[in-house]
Length: 178
Length: 101
Image (cartoon, rainbow over all chains, first blue to last red; front, top):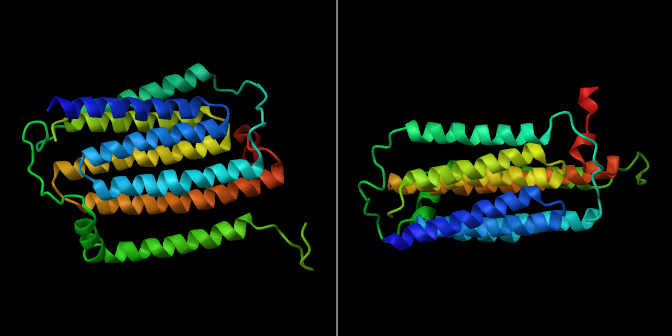
């Protein structure tokens, strides 16, 4: 279907445009907003690749939780007014952009040189109708990958403890705030 | 599924390169941090594309775990940013050069 290609290109333009605007903004709040645009476009691409569960998770966890956390921190530190004075860094901007472009073309060359035997374009695979739904993914998660799944819960616990420990105000021996 | 997988991989590479250049170019610590999240997302996109190509859902589990790691990383990283801002009163990444001296 040509519609698939059209949807892909529209979403790709939004994803890349949002990402580019994100790194070029000076105001961090606008930067977060462009990141959300990019993430929603990527979520549509996930759904197009029939990964419904992960696509929903991308919006809920990323746009709903992580980026709101970023907004909270920006609001908390009141960064909107901060101006970075223009002292020229040692590495010029042109060099930096050139490095990024070289890096991108390196990856593209590697992709182009790799032969994909099971390429989707040549032989469209027939996927099951519930591919990527919640139930089959959860079955994998709770049977085959139970141990890594439990490890992530420990990781989250460590992250919570670490975040609280670092972000709280320091106190001296008498318990007074420094 | 008609779009060739190379398209997804090149889009993923493009997003990754944008994230990497954001880390290099930007001086705002928060934007650098969001660029890292963008790089993780770019990797996720290619994992999802490959998992459809091989008709296996194991990739979705991997993406799920990567998202968890990204969330943990965001929490800890933002705590570090708050701590650094409290100590140095700026989030300009060029100002943090204690290790260079």
